[in-house]
Image (tube, rainbow, N blue to C red; front, side, top):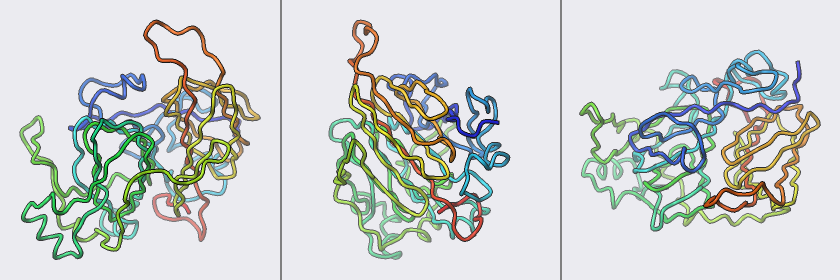
Length: 348
């Protein structure tokens, strides 16, 4: 069996009350009818386990590879694939929400991981803001604000634009607002505690459950909200490190037309998402694969370095089509576990 070929999962799509159709119109995905809010692009979570398309693992679930092909993820351990890569299309506001850390989720959510995540903003309508914190100083003040519905006083918001980046630690009250698309990197967890859902009514006439007691338990009042999502880290040879944390690191890679960027593969695995441009290639010692906006792949531990190339010119464009753009990818590196296996595949 070849352990050096790139792995291309088939995305799983989820309908959401706040979703839209941009996953089809902007990324070309064939999505189900209805308001589709989430593309689970690289996932082995039970709520959306991706099937591999093509290559030696064609037709197998990503969770099955994690369980039965440990050579692909050398250096990582744990009982589940630890990360989840999504694209979110928020036509309407997401609920105001918060996620627990590993310890709380393990105790209260049947051994689940907590949820540390981050957002790379793909697009945002003019004037759009995002919720990335709250203004209460302690549990009692937060409880009073929630009870009185003082959302404008409570919620901390900042304006956003394409290219912004936000780190969302467990315990952060947050919400993506309507008119926004983001690439989300997170721990493989689907635990969300809703604080406020705008009194929305679902198709069956019910409202979605809120989780106020859990919210009061997990909000971290020591967190300092960001002033903006502006990326200030230096870009070196097209590569910018956006975030590094105990679970993963995230880098942005920009490849100019006619150029190549070499991405070192020094990790148990690397997830790559192509989020802008009209295509290119990625080459490893095992071969060359064509890419396009919306491509996602996983580079196993033994893949070797990745050479991402963006062609100087493309085939003749159809009338009205967009011109060729530089390729932009976002790479997520998984860290090897230290200190032995951790519940739900949590890796460091």
